[in-house]
Image (cartoon, rainbow, N blue to C red; front, side, top):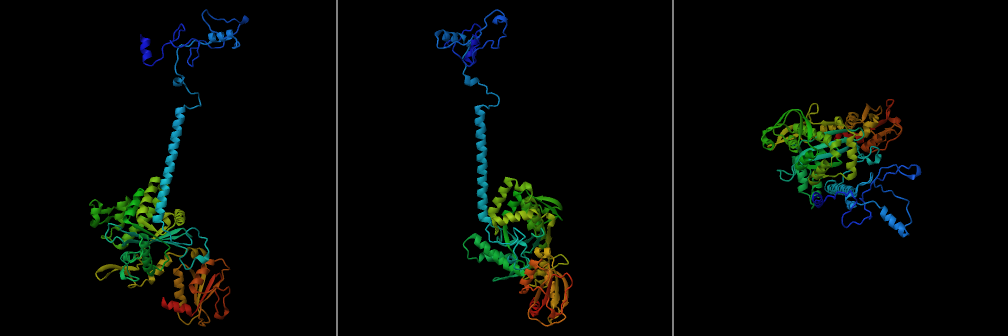
Length: 546
């Protein structure tokens, strides 16, 4: 009875000791789960008999031919006794080294699933990159040295062309008052020859002349250009706004600008959040009750010391200006840019797909640049080689370079040159000296300047101008014979070792260099001089108009 219950539960019936099989199972029919009594090889003894105990001991004899009736009957009798019939598929145990078929199928499915996920992820990032490129990397900017510092001199037309100047602009964007006013105007000037970066902030309240629009604060130039644009596309309007700002700013700093990046408040916050926040060493506590409502009603925007900002906190720290000057705000913005550069270029950021995806999303929605794909790759590699310690900030208010001051114009608080309204000469000289052409400084050619005209002071004023561009002026003097030549003479004594300096000087004075100093001027340059400049009346006229 107990055995019947066990059988009903799906268990195998116990083997019968007398060799009787279940009904439906023929005696002698093989089974994968047959009962096999002692199958060990018997030990032979003399006479072929086995030393064994009494009892039944099946022993396989020599196999007879099966084509004989007797042999067939003997083979049947020789089959082992089968006690039960169990499906072999349910009890089969895989041999060592051969995985179970179900395991193999599971591994295959897992492998295919992972492959599909990788392909889908690659397609997603590829599409996102393509979509971002169309919206963000508009192209159009150009720099001769962005991908190599070994450039043809003919690609350079003026001092400063070897630098990579990027004008970074921040606007409020949709939903903010004055959405297109440039709240931030910062020039990031990269020297790829000497691996240095200088950040220059231009006060948004600087009173300037906007070509075609009269006099206004410089932060309105982009907005005016965009409003007056005849383009029907957002990108075209942005380009027209940037073009007008370039003209306006060019009169102030007189520096070539090769690239632009326009970011609104939303993009800035998203970028900071996408990299997991930024760490800034706050020089002093920033207190601003006017924007406390945006800081959970806390008027302390940032405490002194090292602080980690999320996107909202970083934006408040950069925008606050009511309790500090426009100049102090510019310095905070430079601190944030350095901190953001440090975080973006850490290995953890670029190796994290989530961070990259966040960056792409923020860029694609709220950013315009005139980079192209190649430029971005080259800039990335160049900035990787520049440590944060090589990123310096310059301002126009700290003595001895206190070149800007505050003022009032028609009831408006403005910023103006210390030398006088619209007098940017001192500012330009300081900017040029702070942003020298890397190719000029690398060659370090020694330049001697002589005045061959009857106009006093021409050599000195010319030397000051050249020094502001980074030239190594070693001699300033009058020519013994002041013959008042009409044109300036440039002499190249470097024997071809300073091609970039020669090219820039030829372009500046509009002459072609000669290889020998003319004797009629009575000029004897010091030993080791690489270039001799003998000034004519053309230089005297240019000096008078500067």
